[in-house]
Length: 211
Ligand code: SF4
Image: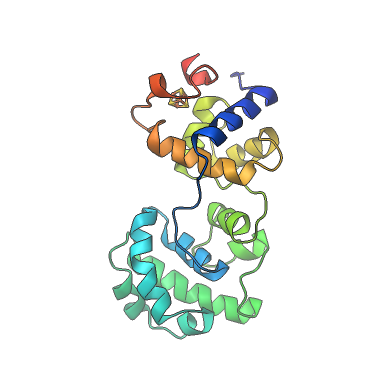
């Protein structure tokens, strides 16, 4: 069985990343849980920067679930046309707004199963909304978190869902949601997919990728 870090070593990793990335937060711009939910759906396979460029007009024209539920898919698609998969996403967010009205009284539910019943909302997106909209301790696993966590040796798993379960067990209490941001930033800045900069990395004496 492949080795993974001890809980003490995992805590040391989180401590180092806390110092390395003191001001991390979501790259998405949002003013409400509703805006966070829509932004997260739009961010699939697209950068946060691209999403932030389209959301001011989107939320200006359709600011809440009733407005978006009444919108025409084609008009919404036109507003978000610069982001990837814009046709699918425009259809999804209009359907999502309608389902919010029909099933949840127009409120974003603070419930994992209800969130994942919404069009375009998967496990990672639901966890992002619960963590950064509702303040729950959650570990959304995106491509960076998956790669970085498994390289470091916080876990040794082959799916995002199993990685999430392992990280929930090994990351110190109260640091789970922050650690999501740390690993995203570390993945973007140092632990790149193709060429990780291990010589310059604050974790290189702990990380199992280089030991
Ligand atoms: S030592 Fe290398 S592989 Fe490990 S976290 Fe740092 S950059 Fe990534």
